[in-house]
Image (cartoon, rainbow, N blue to C red):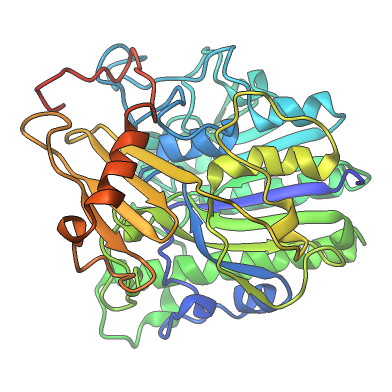
Length: 430
C-alpha cells in the first residue's frame, strides 16, 4: 500500500454525544456531520483511558495503559517536579518514531502531556520533526498562557503578559497545523493534533452566538468551543482539497476521553453512564470518524470494537511495515477498508490510579468495572451486557459467574507493575 499522509485530531473532553452525528440536538456541527457522512463513523471506539495523559500515551505507543509508561496524570512515586509528572523515556517507542523511520515528516501541535522540559519525552525527542504547544497539561488549563513551546524553545506570548488576554492559544495552534500541512503537502507526513478544546478553563474570544440562550457563561463558551472545533475541522478538510491531497490523506477525529461534565444543557454523554475520570462508557467511549476518500467506504456506521492502542499497528499496516512486537493493539485496516474482520475473543483493558486503583475490561459484549476498594483488588467486578444495557444500569455479575471468572482470569496477567504507580496489596491507592 502507498504511504498516505496521516492526521489524527484528538480533542480534549469532547463527549460521545457532543456531535450531531452522535445525537447532539442543541449545538450544530455541520462540518463534522458532513465528514461522518463521507467517511466511516464508529459507535464502539474507545480511548486509551478516562483521563488525559495516560490516554495519549496509549495512542502514541500502541500499548494499553496497564503496560504504558504513563498510567495517570501524575505519579504516585517519583515523577518530575512538584507535580510528579512522568515523562516518556528513550525506550518508549512512539508511532512518530516508527513513521520517521519509514520516511515521514512528523508534526504535532496542541497539548502533549507526556513530557516536562529537558526530559526525553519532549516531542522532538520522540520522533516529531516540529512541534508547537503545551508540554504540561496543567499549563493548558488556560487558553491565554504566558508562553508556549516551539520545538525545545519557550515562545513568550507578549499579548498575554501582565494579565492581558490577547493571544488565544488554540487559534495559534490551528494556524500552525495549517502551515505544517501546506509546507509538507508533497508528503508523506504525520500530523498529530491534540487540541485543547473543549477542555476548561472555559475561555474563548467570542461566544456571542449564544447570547440569547438561557445558559450559564460556561455553557455558552462550551458551545462556542464545539462550534470552533467543527468549523476548523471543516477548514482542514477544505485545505486538503485545495492542495489536492485529500485522497492521499487518512484522517482520524476523536477525543482523549469522555466529557468532563455531562452538560445537561447539551447531554454531552448521551445515554452513556459516567463521564471523564470514570471507568464507565461515558468516560471511555469516544466519537470516532475515519476519513480516506477512495479507500474508506462512504457513509458507513461501524460497530467494530477497538481502542487507541490499535492506532499504531493500524498505521504500520497502512504503510506496509511491521509494528513493534510488543503491541497490545491490532490493526483495524481491514475494517477501515470495509472488509470483514474477526476480532475473536479479544479483551480491552483500562486502569486508573488517582483517587484509588480502578479497572475496566471489555470482552465481546461484556463490560466489567472494578471501582476503588478499601482492600485493593478485593472489590467484586460489576458486569454489564452492553448489547442490552448501553447505560450500564443493570449489574448482572451474579447471573453470569462464568463470565466473571473468565474476566478475572484475564486480569491476573492483564497488566505489569509500574514503579511510578505501585500497587500495595491490601490497600487502595489514595
